[in-house]
Image (cartoon, rainbow, N blue to C red; front, side, top):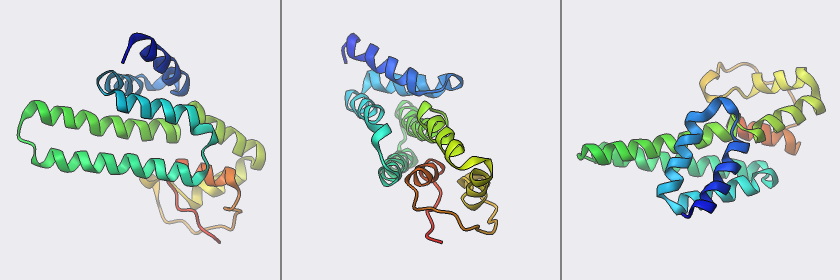
Length: 166
C-alpha cells in the first residue's frame, strides 16, 4: 500500500472510529499496512456502510465472526510462537471491527441518534430490553414493537439482536 492510499484510509478510519477507541483503530490500520486486501475491504465497508440495510449489516457481522472463528481454529493447532501471535492479532482485528461498527463509531452513533429522534427514549429502552446485546441477555419478556422498520432493523443489527416478527 502506498503512502497516499494509507493516508486516505487513516483519515477515513479516524473519522469513522470514535475518539475513545484508538486501540482498535491502530490495530485495524496496522493490519491494513501489512495486508492490502484487508485495507481494501475496510475502505469498501467505510465507503458503503451508510447505505447498508440491516440484512447487509448482519451479513457483515457474520463474515467477521466467521473469520475470527477460522483464526481461532488455526490458533488451536499452530505451534510456532510468532505465528500464534500473528493469528491472535488477526482475531483481535476482526473483533475490533465488530466493536467499532456496532457501538464505537460515527455510524452506530448516527443510528442511535436517529432512533431516539424518531421513537424517543421509551421505545429505545423497550428495544434494548427485548433484544439485549449478547453480553447482557437476561431473557426479559418481549414487548410488541415495529421490528419491520428499517431503522429499528439497523439498530438491532448493530446490537446483533434477533429480529423478531411479533
